[in-house]
Length: 497
Image 1 (tube, helix red, strand yellow):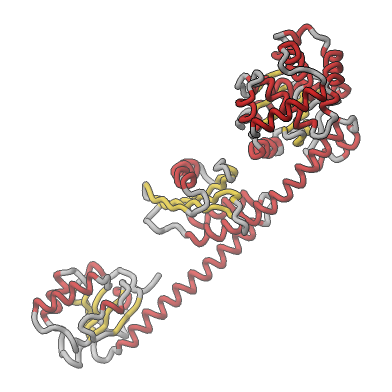
Image 2 (cartoon, one colour; image 1 turned 90 degrees about the horizontal axis):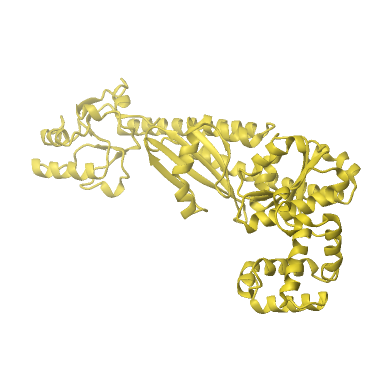
């Protein structure tokens, strides 16, 4: 800590004597400044001990009071008056004025040079700065040590809380909690939510209930938002060590970026493995399952079709990797997350997935030879859940209602695939298929379909005309539309020709 007036007065070598302001002696000094100007305030920043010998000191009581009032307004910590030169003793007017404003007035004897006091203040500040530098260095070392542990992200968050004497929480870019050091972090994160939403790319500060809270965005060099580090410290305002939070934010940004790059690579490998699995190459997927998923599902199994934004699907993927089960395989296929999970564990996995705001379709309990069928069932159930605004739906619920319950699923699906093959095998067939499905789902209304697809209505009409040519039918026919809708229900979002 910087030196105080009390500590200067306790230094026997200086022989200082306190005349007024005894209750204000513990204020830290920013500097000791000698000046004989009639108005030295332009050269003061606040917190100084002003040293003077009275060369320009006013002679009247009113002028002296005005002089001291000006110094107090400038924020000085005290006045040191040197005796033995212009004044043998401290003037009474100055004593009365400093007593009135309750500001320390110190008598400095002739044998104590002002420069000695200035050096003492400077030395104390240098020692304090060096101590702070050493502390910051040790804090950085401890943060780096935490980053090198097995779960470096979690360790860094907890180390931040330890170093600032409070709590810390790591959020993803959407504001969802990823890691937390202590329970109080949850309420602290909630209090700063509005600031993050209003200014997501800026550092925000909040002081409430005797607690300082900082929310620091994790930004890459290209300005991409990776998340937030939120930290809080109870106590006096300004007690939170912002330097630690800033250093930890930079470290977490680097760690998150690298982890994200590695995760993207793993996600691509999982997707490739899932495609191999659907093509019947179980052996290859099984051989690398330990590295990709930590295990492999056993039959009988169920397939989940999870639909949602890329960010939400990533959240589900992270959740599935969090030691929840070793009897599953998953990957992004056709813009959805496909999960194959052992039937004995499917209920628990489904409950975890439903914690995220996604739509889930669940297949029947099937065996490996029926994997493609299970995948179609899950996709159809997810599409129906979405149309009914449900969080999840089982294929069994879908097949128990409507005309499809009376159809031979395998023969009907084979017919649908053959009928739509010209569309599926055409250039841009997947896009045309999705356009047709969306148009049918919106009852053939062009405007609402174009809005849902985020395309111009002229583009939609062009696609519909091409579909009619490829399939050789009239979309204006209710019969044709009904048959197409039933075929879509059979094939789902991931048809196989």
